[in-house]
Length: 305
Image (cartoon, rainbow, N blue to C red; front, side, top):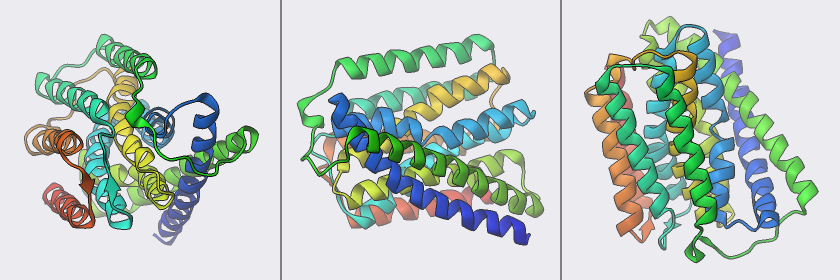
């Protein structure tokens, strides 16, 4: 138990450090590529901070535990919307100004596909390949259709070589930190005797979502709402299309039945809420951030019970 707690502490430290380094490096790389901050969050940071989820889910599928993999995907997306946006808004209110509207619509569509697969109760290699193909189409479309509104004010950024080093170092810290945290958390949760799906939905999902939390909070501190929003929305898209696709290819079986019902309803409701907020809202303030965190707390309690 002591070793597991040490792993959790080391993981948290790695995630906090990695989030800051990743954001600094991503901003520098994006400016060198001519990308806006939102696109940086959606494509670069969103993908990078989803690597712990990818590694965890693929390894779980290979180990014959796809329940952990799919629980991780569903739980991570709920955590992204409720926990990460809520915590980020408490740190610094997020001014939206039209940020991420189209990406939130894509995330909502991907969520609908995942819920449909859960109800369909079927798994196949072609489903995994189709999910990955949709991700490629999305990235190509997004790179070719940026918007002026995606841009934000410039900040002092590192030169490209330094930015690459910072990005790689931050990503490494996130992956190792996420791995340590998940290993420790799974060991603690297993002692409590809960199911693999519930472990995936709660302990693993929250643990692997901490890179997104660290990156979004770091972006908020640096006055980059586009990075924060793009990171959350982009991660939600990657979790379903990239990680879901890879998981289905590794283990082409039906999604666990525990995802049906309450979990699917909460997942879909959170995706609709994020889409509606980005389309109609102007600011995610501290009050709304508190509401999101309260909703996340209720979700964890419901799942565990």
